[in-house]
Length: 366
Image (cartoon, rainbow, N blue to C red; front, side, top):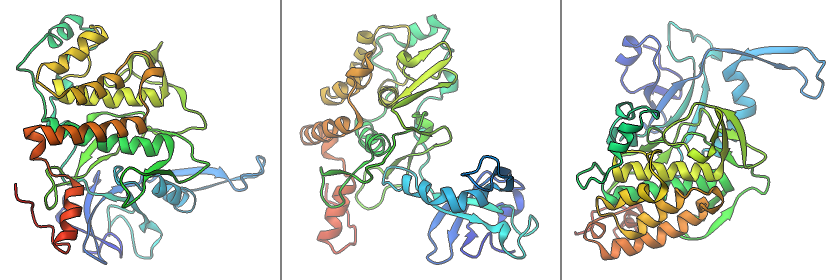
C-alpha cells in the first residue's frame, strides 16, 4: 500500500482499508518515527479575489488546502505554537503530488497535529448528556444540594488543569509566554497581537498526554479551535446556543458577548465541574454555588481562585496572567503542606531530574 505522503505513513495501515472516510488517523513521521494525528481537510473549493486590492477583479477557485498553505498555514502554526495548546505540526496537500488519488490514499489533504495520547478531560467527568436541561429547575436544585459524597476529581489534577489552561489563555488573550528556562518571567512576543477567543472552553476541549518520567500527570493542552475568533477588540456578539460552561451574565436574547472575562468564567466552571461533578447550577445564587466546593474538602487556595473566576461581575474576574500568578503561589503552598501535594511530581521535577542524571529521567524516590 502506498504511504499517505512521502513524509508520513499510517501507524496502523488497516485503518486505511477499513475506514473509507476517516475522521483521523494516527501517522508516523518517516524522518524520526514520531507519532502524530492526521485530520482530513475537507475537499471543498473556495473562491477568492485574484487581486485582493481590486474588488472588481475576477475571482478564482482553489481547494481549501491550497488556500491554507500559502496564506494561513504559517500564522496558524505560530498561534498554536505554545506548550499548553495542541500544536499544528504540518499541512499536507497530497492531492497535488503525482500519482496520488482516492485509490492510493483516503487522506488527500490533511493537517498534522500532536497526538494527545491520554484523551480529554470529558472522559474523566460525568457525561454532560446525563445532565438535565437548563429549564429543568427541580433537577438542578437536587444536583446543587449539599452532598459530601458527590463526585470529584483529585485536587492535584485540578491544579494541573488550572495552571496549564490559564497559561494557554494568557497566550491567546494577551500574547504573552513564559520565558523558557526562567520561571515567572512573562514577555509579549508581538506588539501587534490581537486577542484570540476560543469560544469553547469545556472538558471536551482539554486534552492530556501520557505522563513521562517522574510526572504524575502528562502534559495538559487546550484544543478545539473550530469556533475561535481573532479579534481587534476584546469581544464580539455571536449568535450561539447557551451551554453549561458559558458565563450566564454574557448570555442575552440568544446573543452571546464573547469576552476574555467570559472565557475566564468558563475555565472556572470547568474547575467547578471537576470539584463537584456538575457545572455551576443556574438556579442557585453565587454564594450557594461556591459553597459546594466545600463538600469534598478542597484547599482554601484552590477554592478562592475558582470562586473569583466565577464572580458575577465580569469586571472583577482576574485575567489569565493574574490567575497564573495566584495559582503558582497557592499550588506551591498546597504542595508543601498537603499529603496529596507532597506526592505530586510535575514537569519541572522531571526537568530537574533530567539534569541531575544526565537526561535519563529516572524517577524520584517517594
